[in-house]
Amino acid sequence: MFGLMKARTCTQPVELKLHRRLHYCGTCKTLGSLYGQKSRILLNHDTVFLAEMLSAIAAPDENLREWQRAYQSFNCLALPTAQDRLPLALQIAATATVILAQFKITDHINDSKHFLWKSAGKIFAGDFRKARAQLIAWQFPFDELQNILLSQQSREINALRSNQSAGEILDDLAAPTALATAMFCREGARLTGNLDAEELLEQMGYVFGKLIYLLDAFEDYEKDLRKGDFNAIRAAYRIVNDPSTIKMPDDLCAEVKRECHQLAFQLEDKIRALPMSATFAEMLINRLRHNLSGKIGALPVIQPICKTASAICPTKLSFKTRFRQAVDFSQTLARRYRAEHARKFGRWLAPLIFLLVLPIAFVNPQQATTANSFGECLSLGLNLMFIGAALNAIAALISKPIQFAMPNSGGQIPPPNFNQPLASANQVGRKRRGGSGDNSDSGCCDSCDCCDCCDCCDCSDGCHCDCCDGCNCCDGCDCGCDCC
Image 1 (tube, rainbow, N blue to C red):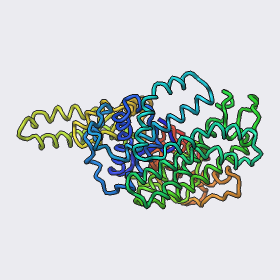
Image 2 (spheres, rainbow, N blue to C red):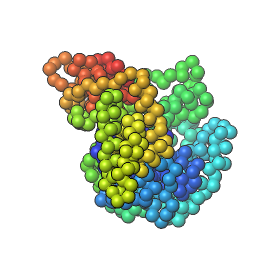
Image 3 (cartoon, one colour):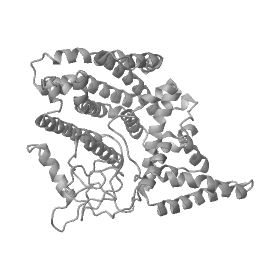
Image 4 (cartoon, rainbow, N blue to C red):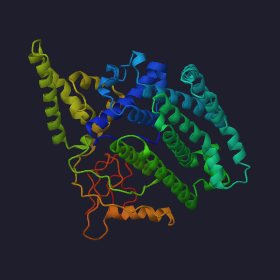
């Protein structure tokens, strides 16, 4: 999995969790149903984000629990069979995934000529043809899309000898990705019947695509130099391919980060303007902020988003609490089964249901407790995300006991001043997170999404962010973070 819009939902309300799961797993299963099992490896967070937005805009009142049973199941092998009942938003996202993967593979073949990329192109050739035919059937301007994306190589050649400014070169190089993303967003609005949102989604898609391209060039800067591949930032700023200076210069790094932040703020404005619920829009914005801060450092926070102590990440509970809640949940499902099958063998099978559900609810309470029946809970045994999370949970329990610190109320951080160096703007947030020296309270994770808002943070006497698993919520925190 890759992409900017990776979600963390452990403290989200049940309906938002369900919305994310059905669109994440739904896009994956729709890929398998339409284009074959192997195409599911192409899934990425950003096309799932497209499905979420289209669904939230086109059908905000849709009951997701009425989707096909295969979508409701946690079993990764259960695919929807009635193709006439596949949600259109998922079909669009799945088709976009395959088509964009085709052009991405083609771009890698042109850049590196590596046999692995050539092999991938041959393996997925049939899926690409089928996805292309689907777009044409939808009256999608595929020829225009193809011309835009295939112009990438000529743009890269021109960038190496262009006399334009660095900003103009980057804009030109990012244009194919930005225009293609805008096109899928615009056509998605048209296909789902939400014509009023076409222009807004197109603008949002353009900014999002440009941000994705710039981040990709930023993250691959050193790798591209080692391999001798083209890198947009190096070409735009005319950095000489010198292996002895492989690290990006500090002033250039700060400038690229500042541009990413500005694009992110533009994207936030576009998301808020879309005809969707304010709660859902803010959830998407918080997701963007967290993931962007994980890639390029702290993103200045405009408003506090921390929740209360009642929303504690269920995957980070102590052994005792985890076991007690697993018992309670297992009893609930056993009683529900007994009541629903009172005339059959419900009374005798209820203890067995309890014993089967208990280890699943203990190992991964976050996913298990979203199941509505013991059948759904047992299907987690064939869910790849559950298996990975279960292994991580077991390793965490063995390695060290996890304790929670109670959060303080989050304070508001002023908007960044782009006239000052980026490091200074970020330091404002870090100082607030680390304690300002006065009697005011401020949570150290105002912009963190490690548990969606890092409810476990307490910086009054140092940073205790025990729910972070590789999270950057305390990146650079002056108070000494013990986990990030």
